[in-house]
Length: 429
Ligand SMILES: NC(=O)c1ccc[n+]([C@@H]2O[C@H](COP(=O)([O-])OP(=O)(O)OC[C@H]3O[C@@H](n4cnc5c(N)ncnc54)[C@H](O)[C@@H]3O)[C@@H](O)[C@H]2O)c1
Image 1 (tube, rainbow, N blue to C red):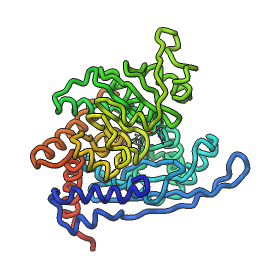
Image 2: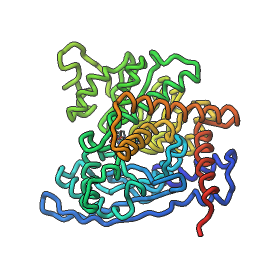
Image 3: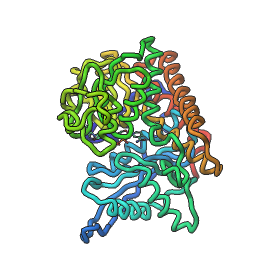
Image 4: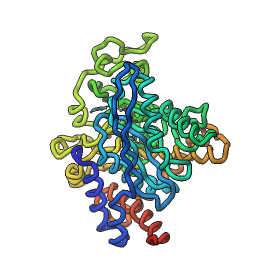
């Protein structure tokens, strides 16, 4: 799947078609994005050089409402990847029943090689490139890999400059000071933690002391680790692109978080240069393992929270986790997915597991439209209610229709909802 995420998404749809109550003609329509814009972005870098970047915005489906989806800055961005991610956003917003369609954007770049000034110029140029196709009622971008509240602030400002007034609701994931909502930064990790708790309730197992391995300690992975740790689980391993840290007795998630927040790498942490609490009250002593080894640890829950296509036909037989909660988008290839189903390993699919981010993005957009702000407790309670309800409906679908796995259950619900919207609206002209 790492080769062609779009084919992976289509294969996931095909697996669900057999069980979904969807007209075949509508189903075929759902396999094609509405449109994709490709933009060329010449940017004068701080070094004085002019570099020409390429970016995309794919609007996959708008039958249920305005397009919604993040913007990714990464060297491996491709048009096919952006289109696959836009498709997944469509199924995700439908599954958690938000009044949105799905979209995604991406710029091919290596953010590590760019200064803050370069990133600002690139973001503004990209926003100008796609500004005719976005808007509060049209298409609302948000952060994804390597983009953050600052990126959203630049996008909001650029769009607003052209409009001539401030338009906060054109993007979500903004800083609090310009219309962001409390709870957005940790929303995806909080959702991952909430669905893991629900899964354990469903399986009638105790989460306290369950062992958890999390690949990726960025926005999603680190917040999921912190909240699962608080919920009593034992986070035994995590990683970043440099290395993985493993301690069967449990990692000191707070100490690791402080190290990474200060810009540190996990390879430095395991080398012992920085680990331990700043006040010296604890001294974490994890082993260094590889990202590949982390995936095959003997744990109760494996949470891929980094990149696509990490659970593949090559390593799926070696997996020893009894459940997988997909925090990343598209971490499991179709071939590996079939093996996980055969092996009876429960997988909470990405479109459910990582939906906390888009749910709280929706809550931010609603607050902007109302010109009213809610306290953190209200946002978190609404997130829990919405993701909990989507989890329960997925489980009901899985049990009632005796479906092969939770992904098929989630897809049938999402496809049926989107198809229904298409049927009511009819075919134009
Ligand atoms: N941020 C959100 O709100 C959100 C919402 C839904 C889904 N997601 C998905 O979650 C995943 C992570 O997003 P994020 O926002 O936490 O990104 P991030 O950039 O904050 O963190 C990514 C983490 O993965 C690590 N990583 C990168 N490449 C790796 C590799 N090849 N092997 C192992 N580790 C690697 C990085 O070092 C970092 O620790 C992505 O798939 C993203 O699409 C994010």
